[in-house]
Structure formats: C-alpha cells, structure tokens
Image 1: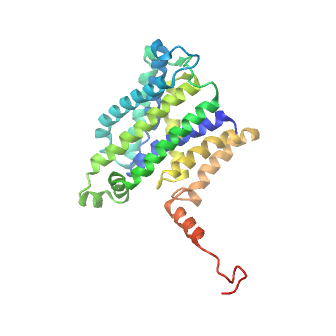
Image 2: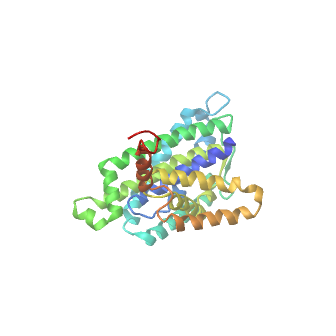
Image 3: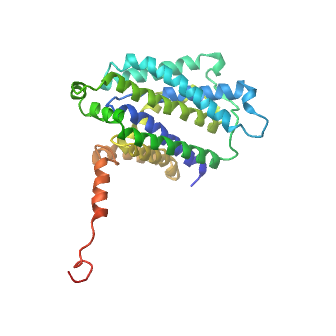
Length: 302
C-alpha cells in the first residue's frame, strides 16, 4: 500500500475519534473540522514564521512538531472549553447546526486574516520526515496512543458517565451525574484530538488553507462514525480508515467511484444501523471463539 494513502487513512481515523467522543455522550457535534483547521494553522504559522523552531538539521525537528501539538491542544482546548459552555446547552440537530455554524465562522475569519495567508493559505511548511512512510509511522503511533486512551476512558468513571448520558440523560442526572461537565469534557477531548491531528496534517500536506475545515469535512467525518459505529472507539477508526481509502482505491473506475462511494455510505447504515463495529459484534465473536468442538464432531469417542 502507498505510504501516502496510509497516512491519509490514519488521519481519517483520528478525525473519526474526534467525532466519536461527543457522540459517546449522545452529542452530535460537527465542530471537528474547525478545531482541525486551527491545529493546522498553528503548525503552519509557527513552522514558517519562527526560524528558531527549524533547528540546524536538514529536516524539521520532531521536538518542534511536539511543541506545535502542545500549543494547538492548548488553544483548541481553551476555545472548546469556552464555546462548549454555550453550545452544549443545545441537543441533537440543534447542536449539529450550531457547531456547523462555528466551523463556517472559523473558516471565514481565517480566510480574511492577512497573517494566515488569506484565501491562498500558507505554503512551504517544513517537513519533519523525508518520506510519507515516516509520517505514517509517526501518525500510527499517535493513533495507537489515542486509541489506548479512549479504551481506558471507556472503563473509567467519566467514561461510564458518558455512556449513561447517551442512553438516558435524565436518568443519568437523577443518579447524581454532572451531565453538563461530562458533556463539556467530551467536547474538549474531541477538540484536542482534532487540533493535534491538524498539526500533523499541515506538515504532511506541506501547505495549509482554512478551506480544509469546511462543511463538507464535517459531513465526511460524521460518515466515518456512522458507518464504523459509535458504540466503541474501534468503530470510528474502522470507518475512518475504510472511507478514506475507498475513493482512492476506486480511482481506476473513474467517475463511477463517487457513485460506489456514495452507495457504500448509503447502504452501510441500512444493514448496520448501529455501525459495522459494535460491542455486540465482539461478544458474538468471543462466544464463537470460545466454543470447543465436541468429541463426536472431532471424530473421537465421547
């Protein structure tokens, strides 16, 4: 598999996890592309405007990339903390509309700022790796870390509170769960993941434009979770990997690839209403793997 395509797939999986975190609380937030764009803008500005971060080597230092990720996480986290206290008062489709509006506001503001390159964006972002394979290895390690943290989160008290809110918010509140703070936590974590993903994407693409964080991106990232499943962290990872790769793998069929891609997104929820990857799927597989054939089935004596 081409390393460049693998890197795009891994970035798609990270964005899927960003959408998954609010959905774990039953919150349909489509703000991921906005925070993704902020992270990319932070990386583009710091790496091109601060020569001190470039170091003396032929490639951009990894330590500088990590610093950009930390600053992007701080900025998106603070922004999400402030905005979340307002927009999370909404629910369902109303929250989705509000977060789409947020994405569009961030895009328009960034496009009209001179220091962000305006409509042209920022070019010549330095490269921390000599090849796409280096990016893929770095992003794979980042994805593995975030998946591990998501898995740990599901087993913690805040993670169980998120699941309780998703199932029945009123019942969760009656049991003493602080629903407002729990939903805000999920929203902030989503912003952190999107922000650091934007940093990696900016260096990989070698240029950055705020147009990358638009309405189309909101729908695409949501499709990752709807198709893969929102009941476990593995669902958005699977959806992000598959739906990012599919258009490229179907490129030989020409314009028909868009029809096939749309058909997959349409048919998937019809056959898998809760997504392809669900906790029930793991339970079924575990039961089947745990079955041992009887002596009669093995041809032996009972």
